[in-house]
Every structure is written in structure tokens, then in C-alpha cells.
Image (cartoon, rainbow, N blue to C red):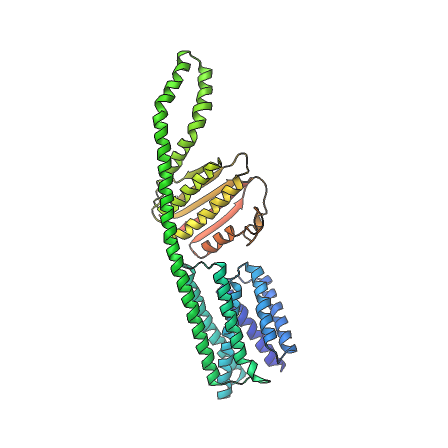
Length: 423
């Protein structure tokens, strides 16, 4: 009894934790391995203590594993992944047991069949996730619905397999067919749900693109109106200087020029200079976001310096994703600058050796806990607001050709996005 138990405990460890590491692209570290071994040991002990109530170790496996992996990844979707993996393992175990008992196969064949089935289905599951990852952003309500669907499926599977069996695991072709039929129905429902959400997201993205274009045009019109006003007042400004010149009052002229003319008109000239830089950025969606943020920052008297030294016509990244990333980073910079006496935000699009380097930096009023910035839920602005930077990290991590670096340096917060293959 000891050897089979040890083998299946090890098999459970490989199936559950190997699958979740594979699905979520998790790096294998000693800390994570030890945490998984601890949870697996606890679940194994529960299985020994309650051999006729397998729902106890299974439920604890999901709860403990969900808690551990949420602490490691800060991603709520890990709960869905773990429940799905347990469903797959139940189905694989039941199918393998049917073959083993029917054909009187060995324990080694039993374990091999389980591993092959789980591997095949987990690979398909990951491909499904990759298919929908780019087009779907799940709301909290959608995540709750998905968790409910997979949880109900898990309990139905458990009830059909383990509840009627008494002291032994009875297998039947009819039960197996019902399990597969129910599993396919739930997969179909989830697929329909994700497809519908994807269509809504794509429609929303089109509306966002249109709104960003509208925002950019309105911002451009506002700058043009300011410049027209400046040109209209240009003659009056020159005439206002005439008195100082005729009386040779150079000190008064200098004071009047710097205090009355430069201070009033420098914001108009500055915005015109910024928008002239944006002309080199040939992506209307991105220009719309930046223009909107510049005007928003201007309301608080926060200067946003923009530098685009070379023309940029294409970026190998989804425009909506880049718009979201830039919007979050610039919003964070603005919020950090509102209460400062001497705020400054710099934004640059630099091309270096077939790479586009986007730099966003802002002054900091005080030192921050930099190592905690990317924790979900943490924020320097208060409770329950720290979702921006984790979202940026999640979006950019889905692009292998993009590197994202953040650091603080001499009271400056600096974010760098390096994109390969831009032109």
C-alpha cells in the first residue's frame, strides 16, 4: 500500500503543479517548489486520514493550491486554472482506471495513461487560453461566472465518479460517456461566453480608437485656436512695447516682457511645440491618448515634455494595448505630480538600432517602496487602487519582443519600454 500511495502522491504533484507552472509561464524556483511540496504533503495526509471521503483532500488541494499560487502570482485567474486541472485529472483518472480494470494492465500503465491524457488536454487548454488572451479582458463579473461554471463542473464530476461507489471505485462506460458529454457541454458554454465577451471587447476597442482620434483632433483644434489668438494679439503685443522703447526704459521693458508676455503666452507656445513633436508619431490612436493626457496635465499646471526625434510609422504591438499601457503610466505620473511644487513629466519615443525605446519619467515628491509597486492591490495613493502597474506588466509580458524596465533614480520614477522591430 505504501509504494502505490507514494507513486500516486508523486503523480498528483507532477500533474497539478506541473500543469499550473506550464499554463501560467511560472519560473521554477526553490521557494515555489517547497511551497508546492508542502501543500501536496498536506493533501496526501488528508487522503490517508479520509480514504472514504476523497472530497476532503480534493477540496483542500484546490483551496490550499489557490491560496499559495495567488500569493506567488497575485492573479485571480489561478483559481480557475486549478479547478480546471483537477477536473482534467478526475477525467483522466477515471478513463485510465476503466482501461486498467478492463484489460488488467499494470500500475505503470495506469500512471502513464493518466499523464498522457492530462498532458494532451492541458496543452489544448493552454492553446485555448492563448487564442482568447489577446481579444478578451475579463471583468470581475465574468471571472466570477467562470469560477462558478468550473466549480459546478468539478462537483458534478466528483458526484458522478466518487459518491455512488461506496468503498471502491466502480467504473462504467456509461458514466464515462456522461462525463465526457457533460465536459464537452461545459467547454462549449465557456467557449460561447468567451467568444461573446471577445466580440464585445473588439467593439469596445473600436469605440476607444474612435474616441482617441476625436480627442486628438479636439486637442489639435484647441492648440490651433490658441495659436490663432496669439497671432491676433501679436501686433498688440508689439505696440505695448513701444512706450518702453520710446522712453528707453530697458529695465521696465525687460520686466514687462518676462512677467506679462512670456508668462501668459509660454504655455501656448509650449503646447504648440509639444504637438509639433507628435506630428512625427504617425499613429492616431497613440497620439490621441498622449494629447488627451497632455491637456489633462496642463489643467494642473504640470508640464509634459514630449520628444519624438524621428518619424515613427508602425509599432509591432496592438495599438489598444499600447494605448492602455501609456495611459496608465502617464496617469500615474500625473497623479504623482499633482501635489508637487516643481512637477515635470518627460515622454520620449527614441529609435535605436531597429528598436523603439519609450521612456516615461516623472519627479517624485518622496521615496517609495519600489519593490512593492507591481503587487496587485498596492498603491502609494491609497487602498484598493494598485491595479495599474500589474496590468501594464501583464499586457507587456504577453509580447516576447518587448522588454519593460522600471526604476527610481535621484527622485525620478523612470519606465522604459523597449520594442524590437519598430520603424
